[in-house]
Length: 210
Image (tube, rainbow, N blue to C red; front, top):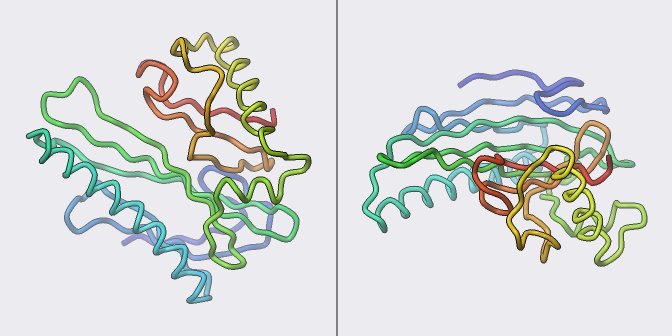
């Protein structure tokens, strides 16, 4: 188990707070390539809320891979995770964002299946921050505003980067479940493979504040 200190900078997002925590890198005893972080802030209740959510996400992923293999008579050739961590401040709230990259490959498949899952936490309480939190902290956010803004930014990015979207991708009917804040407190939404575009388009990250 590898340990390191999160102090003012982390892997993905620049830290703009004086927050410091110990991050332990943990490895599944059953899958050597399944790794995940555990957080130690010094407050047991906060640590427990955050780490319980992280472990639940890892367990959900691994369980889903093997259930799918059993259902379809597949052989799991590879299963792995990785992660990136960062924190930032929104007013008096310190936000911890964890991006978990989850990948699996079934023997004989054309390519691995890869997803990026975003977990956001309020470090003052350890509570996980979902889409409803955006409405609370966002200036001028109203019902319908987020999806309209995301439609606009996704359209702009697809044209700029020449990303081929599925014919019925726009307008979006709902927001993606995965989002995070970057070092500038911009909100990013993540579209997984095949969600709105072919596999070749990759996982699409859209900054709605750019």
